[in-house]
Length: 286
Image 1 (cartoon, rainbow, N blue to C red):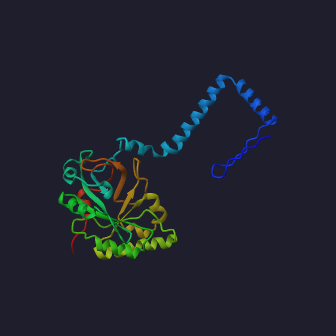
Image 2: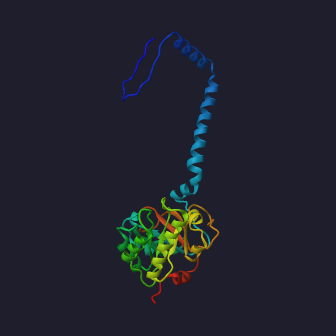
Image 3: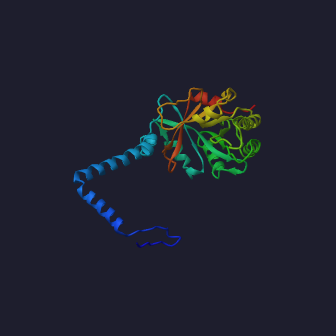
């Protein structure tokens, strides 16, 4: 009997040669030789079918709407005329005059643009000030959002947003983008933390902030009645209609939009109301 051992680092295996091993190998070879060719074809087709089912079930089925969106077949919501986008530095340099003049969703112009301003208690979007200024110069109703961080306290995050963002008459209310729950907080503590941010920001700007999140997160963590007094911006992609049963103002329905003036993909949104309703939602100087 001969044993070959591979050195450590390459892997260790034992290969045995002997009468019993050779007999087993010969039996296996003869068995394979007796299997008809048709059986090989059938087995191969079954394996291929299994791979196809696995790929579709786990990768295509759950994201069917996204595949269509990425390849240009976006399903635009029916019955809405007020369209908008939300942006950050990920959109790069935007050609604002092109966007204002040529961007259309089903023949409807883009009316509002919401852009990322801050994140946590120390990060500001590198394109925020330029985007914020040019949005107004090109006639868009503009807004700014803060991205909630699980690494900073609510008070610090609210004060940082206030220091960095000056909202003016005609701007949308401040937006809190909250998509993750702090793992070190209970559900109640997390809810109270979000409310603290909203309260501090509301007292500064004298308007109720907008809450942005996806609908399952809203239902699970922000479903208390106390949150119903805040305008809700729902993120729900690749569906024909919003499944959330409560009241909402904005719907971000895809992250795979394409518009003139923006290189690459951009989030598309609609407002649930008329243009005059949207304007009434905006900040008014006291």
